[in-house]
Image 1 (cartoon, rainbow, N blue to C red):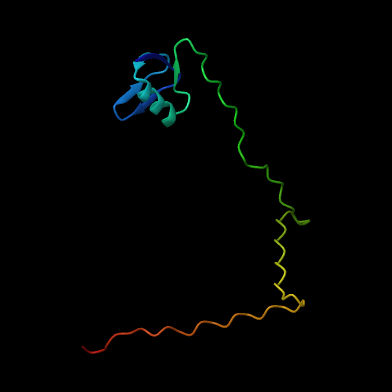
Image 2 (cartoon, rainbow, N blue to C red):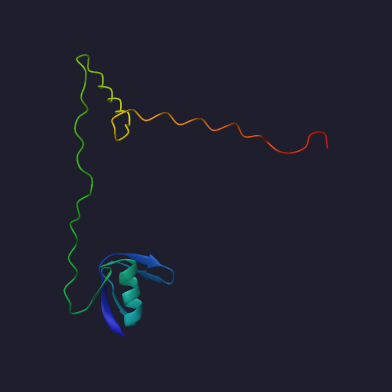
Length: 106
């Protein structure tokens, strides 16, 4: 068993630790807690794990273009798909109507 410092509150199943507490745990239990919630436990005598400064993967959106009267400009129509020779692709034929099976009047 080893002593660990609890870096932030953790509660799961049978384990509940409050931030700042010192706990004695089997290495396997401590590894499980840190896999479940990385950075929760730091072995005493070690430096705490640095907090990650993660930026979101979202790019800022541009302001939508507007018409002179302030209304949003409509999205352009997509270009029709073409065949390799440049001719427009034919529209797919509609599926025939499905008949429902079963007997009437039984």
